[in-house]
Image (cartoon, rainbow, N blue to C red; front, side, top):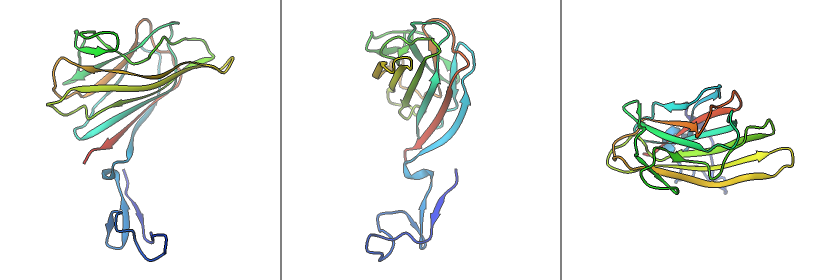
Length: 195
C-alpha cells in the first residue's frame, strides 16, 4: 500500500497544516496505519463448494465483500467456518442466533435464491481474527435482491462467534447449506490496521 503525501494541506483559515493530522516534515501523510480499510484482493467467484479467504495477518480487522454472488441451489442458507493453523474447524464450535454448539455460523438471516434475477450483496467483518486470548466474531450485513420486481427479500444483520477456543484464526470459509457457488459475482477482501 502506498502512502498519500499532500504538500499543502491547510485549515479553514488557510493558516497552515491541521495539528491533528499526521504530519511528516511539512507534508500531511496518510498511510495504511491510520485506520483506513486497505485493499487486499478482488477475485471473480468461481463455481465451487467453498469460498475460502485465508492468510489473515495479526493486527488487522478483515472485511469480506460479496458482490453479486449466487448459489447453485435455490432456497439455501449461507454459512461460515473459521480456520486455525490453516485447518477449518468442522466441529460443534460455533454459536449464532440459531443455537450454541453448531457446526457453522449462519450469516444470512433467510434463504438465498439462485434465479438469474437474484444475487447476494453482503459485507462481512471479522474482528482481529489472528490474535489469541479473545473470542472471535463474524458480523454480516446483507441483502438478497430480486431485480424482476425490485424488492429486497432478505436484508439485515446476522453473525455469530467461534466458541471452541480463543486462539488465533487465520481464515474464513463461506459455503451454502446445500450445493455450490455459481460462477457469478466478485469477492473483495480489505483489512484495517488496528495500531
